[in-house]
Image 1: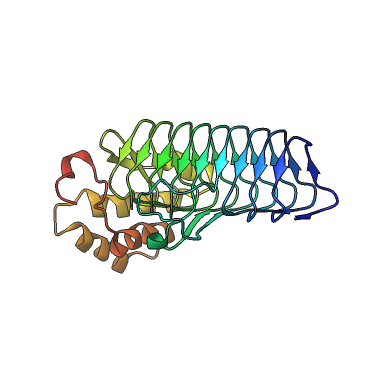
Image 2: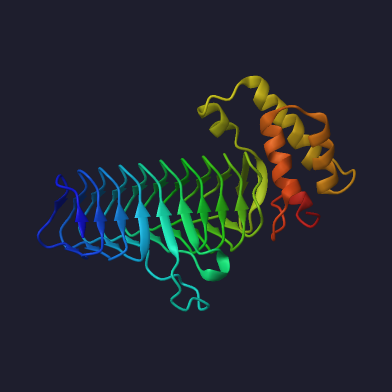
Length: 272
């Protein structure tokens, strides 16, 4: 066991001899820390938290009661192979959150970025890649192999299908079922999710200039409101004609493709 001199571990907590505990990290009553867990500096682990597996958590993260991090993936293909869960710095993990490590078939790693907020009852499944400053509201769940870009917000009780990509700065409405990819800066809602437009509110909150928003709106219209060509052809035309960074981020995401189709406006749901 490697425990920093300034760490504080409650007498009722169980910390395995193989764990690494950083400076000024606090572990609350009845929490359990497994043998391959590495906790950075300044963490606050509340009571009744279980952290297991090959799990690494960065500095300044706070974990609230009845959370389970690093337990075996909920995947019948998992046979006990050594896989990892990496959680970044200054992440806020509220009560009853669950996060699973990766699987051998999915690359062996689940990663969560810095400064994220996971509200009560949220779930991050095996092999997910979650960016920085991401918010999952109460009881939002993401299935295996999902990718979530920086600053994306997932509303309460939404559910994201396996292998879906959610682009940076996207907004997923509450109770939305997402079975298709969500473009960067997109806003989706419904069961099943439809593209309702751009996340303009989020862009304004993050300081995007008016000119940037106008350029992205123009690119959005060219890609999603035109009937000429396929979605990919329209995206390529925008990529060839704009210098705007946000617009390029949106169309590059479309052109990169994935294993799922794309969320599009309701009238075009059968075409993308």
